[in-house]
Image 1: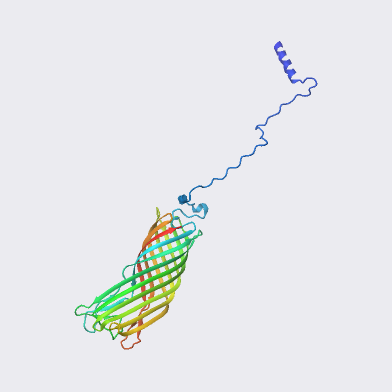
Image 2 (image 1 turned 45 degrees about the vertical axis):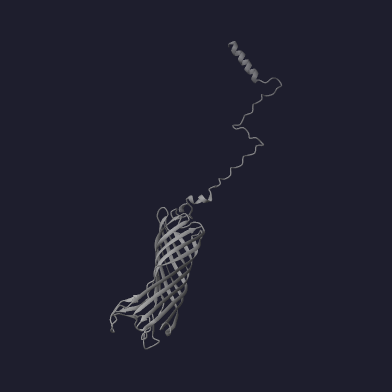
Length: 372
């Protein structure tokens, strides 16, 4: 073996073999894969959850959850018209209606001088009238709502008739055998219409663009009509016939609404309702001649009756966030609202006839609404 190799072997053995009296060789400690943690180090606190700092005025810009995600949301296209949150709301409507009554005839223009009755019957019609309707209520987050509404309308009307040469007016309102003919006639009418509605409703979204609302409640109605006629000439010496009808009733109403949404807040709207009101109909009749100096009739006919009422409206609207505008056409019919008295016999003084008279209102409405 070469000298250099022996020298290396001797040095290796001297290194490994312990010296006398020193014991076994010392083993170096094995370090773990990761250094030990310090004994006094405090762990870092967990990060707090992210807080929503969106201002409240921009909360409406966040789309609502889809119904299939949470089970409680509403489709985004119906959110403006079917609120998903609770809160108060109010609407105000301008009404442009024409009332109509079936008992406003006052004279027949007779073109013959004999016993034959030939000619048109003149009747009065109400003029276009302005009114309003206000409603206030509260939406619950369950889809229910409670509301109170008030409707008011005041209307007037006037008409006149005059006999041409060779003609004569036959009054239709006077008692037979007393004031049977005249040359001129003036008629006027007045209507005061007030409704008070208290209803509870429930809204349901059937799909992403269609929702319905069913409602029911009670209505109190106060409807007053006045119809006055003045005849002059021949038998009539400023002969006047003054009639008035007043109905006060209370009863249940039910109805439904439907909303079909389109794009950009536009939607179609339909509403129908009906009810039965029980109340008292007061009808008075006063007939005079000679400018009020002579009284021919002064009587009242007060009856208690049930009056059916039906209403339907259709239109469209637009809504942006909590503000809405609607417009449409509405028709309301009161069946047999009044029972004016007519005396029909010139011999039997007590022979009367009562003719139930309807009242209808039809025209346009414009509604402004606000949800809080």
